[in-house]
Image: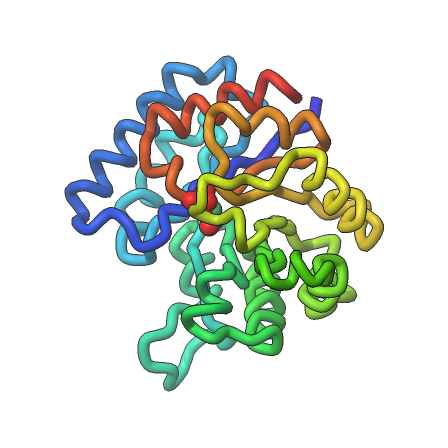
Length: 247
Ligand code: PGA
C-alpha cells in the first residue's frame, strides 16, 4: 500500500506562540487517537519558522505517528551575510525534513523568480532536505490555455534532479478561493507531470477540505497540500482520515 503525504501549510498563522502550541497539541492528540487508521499517511507540518523549534523538539515522542516537519521557505546559501534569511542547513540541523519552495504567494508577493527558486532547491537538496516545489498556472494563464506551457517552464529548474523533488500542483486560481480544481481536470495535469518523472511524488493543493480530499487521491495524486483547512485540527485530521480511505 502506498503512503500518502499530507502537508499542513500554516502560512503566516497563528499570531501567537500560545495559539500555535494549542493548535499543535490538538493536532497531535488527534493523530495519536487515530494512529491505526493513519498509519499510511505521512503528516508534514509546516508552521512559520519561529514556531518550528517548539514542535521539532517533541518529535522524538511522536515518532510513531508519521509526523514530520517542514519550513515554508529557505534561502539558497548555507550561511553568511544574508540579513533576515534562514538556510536549509539550519533547518536540517534543527530537525526539519521538508521545505516548501516556490509557493505562488512567494512568487507573486515576494517576486521570487524561477532562478531564485532553482537555487533554493539545489541548496535544500544539498542539505538533505526534501523540497516540495509548488507549481501552477494563474487564472489568466488558464484562460489563455497556457497551463502546460507554464508548468513546463516552472519544472525546468529542477532538472536533472526532478526525481528527488516532491511536486505540488497548486493552480493559483484554486488557492484560498473555495474553488478547487475539478479532480478530472487535476488528473490530466497529474498525467502530464508524471511524464517528466515517474518517480516524483505529486501532490494536489488548492482549497482542499475534508469533502473533496478523497477525490484527488482517487485519481492518483500521492498526497495533498492543505492551507486554510490545516488550521482547524478536527477538519485537518478528517482530511487525513478521508484521504486514507482512498489509498
Ligand atoms: P488553501 O491553500 O488550502 O487555503 O487553498 C493551499 C496553499 O496555498 O498551499
